[in-house]
Every structure is written in C-alpha cells, then in structure tokens.
Amino acid sequence: MTGNQTPQTSPKASLKQHCRQEAETAKLASALAASLEKLFSQNPQAHPNISLEGDLGAGKTIFARYLIQSMGHEGRVKSPTYTLCEPYPIQKNNLSFTAHHFDLYRMRDPLEWQEAGFAEHFDVPGFCLIEWPEKAEGTLPAFDIQIQLKAGADENERFITLNALSEQGNIVINSIHVN
Ligand SMILES: Nc1ncnc2c1ncn2[C@@H]1O[C@H](COP(=O)(O)OP(=O)(O)OP(=O)(O)O)[C@@H](O)[C@H]1O
Ligand SMILES: [Mg+2]
Image (cartoon, rainbow, N blue to C red; front, side):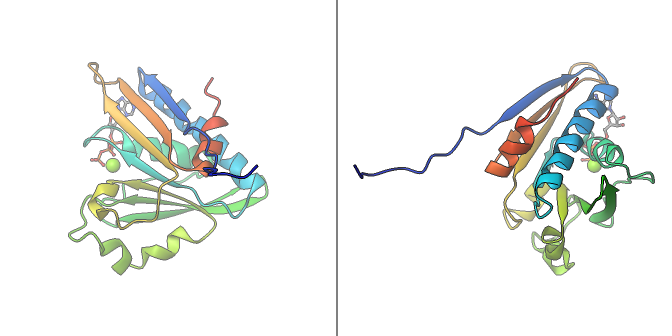
C-alpha cells in the first residue's frame, strides 16, 4: 500500500553532563574527541560543524582546547578572539584532518567570516568548532552538534549539554562514552 509516508527521522540525541570541576569538562571533551575520531575513521569525508554556546567565561575555549589536545595536538590552543579562526592539523591513527576553531565574538559584520575567506574551512576534511556563532546571524553552514555551557553555583561547576542537530550529529553523540 502506498500513502502519505513521512520520511523517518531518528530522534535527536542529547547528552547532559554536570561537570563539578575542570577535569570533568576535560573528560567530556576527550570523550567527544574519541567519538569524532571514530566518525572520521569510518568516513574520512565527514565534516561535522559544532557550535560552542554560553556566556563569557562559560568554558567554550577551554572545552575546545581539551578537545583538540586530546586528538594529539601538542602545541598551544589559544583563544582565536583576534584572529577569528585558528587551524589545527591533526594526524591520528593514519587519519589526517584539520580542526578549525573560531571565535566570532569580535566580528563587526555577520558576513566578516566569509570576507575573511573562511568558507573554505567548511569543505576541507575535518571539523569546525565555533564560539559565538550567533554573531554570524544565521549565515554559517548548518550545525551538526550544539554544545551549551552554563556556569553553576560553584565557580568550578559547569552544566554542559551536547545536542545533535543532524543525523551525523546523532551518530557522534550516540557513540560518546564518558567514563
Ligand atoms: N568545570 C569547568 N569547565 C570549564 N572551565 C572551567 C571549569 N571550572 C573553571 N573553569 C574556568 O573557566 C574559565 C573558562 O574560560 P574560557 O576562556 O574557556 O571561556 P569562554 O566561554 O571561551 O569565554 P569567551 O566568551 O570570553 O571566549 C577558565 O578560566 C577555566 O579555567
Ligand atoms: Mg572563548
């Protein structure tokens, strides 16, 4: 029988973590890194886009730093506040890809990221991590994962939520194992 069949979409995965100290944030970032590596090993062409959302000082840069370093990057991961974007070439388990870490807070115009030639960063093998995506006012490519960071009552406490926004995001979030 044929009829009005709506396409089946799986429910969007979500992972919430209460990180009582920075080390727990590091563990979550590292678990996400492992899941992203798994995605790239299965599909070297994958290109997840990840937003990092939260107030000033919420921990977006720290999360990006732990994520990139746990993929094997040994140098510094500095805040891209002034450069808008920093690239990190990663080589791991015979895989080669680039993490692009953006901080759009200082953009004066929502399209400044395009004028700076950053659109091509969304096409190379790897992934993009973007702080302050709201500054681009909806002009960025679609996100696969949204990471929300919120401060808790204690200064070292954070509530971190990872939401899948696409099927690719679902795959990544469903294969995260936090110890
Ligand atoms: N559990 C925690 N998780 C993450 N960061 C923490 C935690 N506890 C304390 N911190 C501290 O919070 C600060 C977070 O700063 P960070 O630069 O990452 O914020 P940000 O969200 O990137 O801010 P901005 O919007 O200014 O870029 C760091 O100094 C970090 O050491
Ligand atoms: Mg930051």
